[in-house]
Image (cartoon, rainbow, N blue to C red; front, side, top):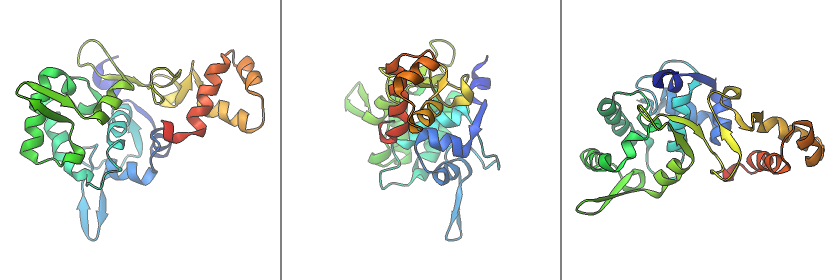
Length: 228
């Protein structure tokens, strides 16, 4: 499956994507479709233009995962829109933040230059210069990269997300269960529904041929959303 087809694959509704991303659906809609406030229209951040579609692509989910780390800052996401647009043009892809290429060492100087040209606020910056030839990534970028698997070839597009980190079996994969979180192919929400119904963890694990640790990880993902 080609890069563009993977990233442009529609995997779920806005509401379902917001649930996986742990953000309000209205926030995700604003990032995708823009919003009007006090008679002024603010364009989308994740899309070049509004499309009217509330179906979310894999590329949009990955980029929203990145943006999520910055939304708690008291800085408008609109400041990131021109930066993302510049990255689209530079790399020739619709979802530049869903690729590893912008973050490799040789590209960090370019990121810094674009940030400076656009006067990106400190709270939204991706990279900082610490010496003449040393450029370090913001800790939120590092956390994002630590939780995303990128392909090793081609455009190095995002293949899956580890929402609880790589030590957890919980993954979000566009080719599994329409992008819903799973452990070994079983939806975490299904396991949580059974646990909520007072089915013992050991019995759930046996019924789905899963390790007990995998079921507990699924429950951690569902019951403690701040961890993801």
